[in-house]
Amino acid sequence: MACAGAIASVVAGLVLAASGPVVIGTDAPFPAYTYLDEAGVITGFERDVMDQVCARAALSCTWELAYFDQLIPGVMSGRFDVVLGGMAVTDDRRALVDFTTPYHGTDPEEWYIGPPGAPLPAMTEVAVQSGTVHEAHLRRMGYRHVAFPTEPQVLEAVVSGRVGLALGPFHSRPDIHEFIAAEGLEFLYPEMIPDDGVAMAVCKGNTELLGRLDGALDAMRRDGTLARPENRWFE
Image (cartoon, rainbow, N blue to C red; front, side):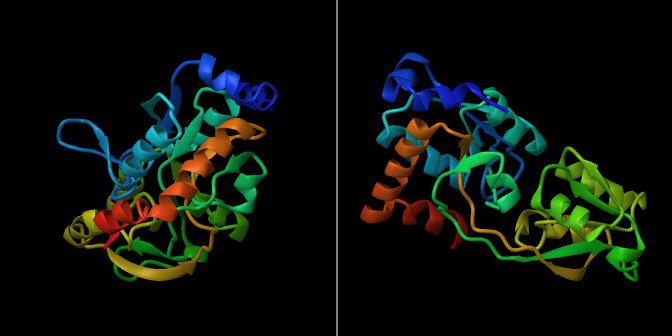
């Protein structure tokens, strides 16, 4: 599918200069990557990173919220210029969009959660957030699963007993550990889901915007700026 951003590679920087703000799409209930603070403002690790990238690349950036499964289709269609929010780089996604160089590593070990004694993943239905690497993994494994647009819906499905298990980035999320314990759920079965790190995605062929993003990220690595949000949010 062609997208509006691909035109940028034809006329270099003139398109970005004339087209107005760069629209960034994200799914914000995902601390510490992106989430809404008490005032309803998008904050987190990737907000800090992207604000610095926009400043260094001389981009006028605006933010829009969307469900996670709308991010890659949105950048492909031209709804967004950039998408981020714990966006893991995988071969499946590389076939659809272009990624910046990764700026954060991930732990490949993910966990199924469920009530004590829940069946193995191959023996029950699993709740998962749509558009995620976790959904793609369940599809590859051939496991029965039901996908929901948001993480709270995934958690509600396993709490209510609609499904036997849920799969997601729960183990690395201290913000929901208390909820899991309070609902009588447990971390039951580990699953290795490797990727190539976290990055921003742009429309395939938008080499002008991709180059400006990568240039800013490279400069931030060299002068140590990129380490500051990493230390703030993940140390």
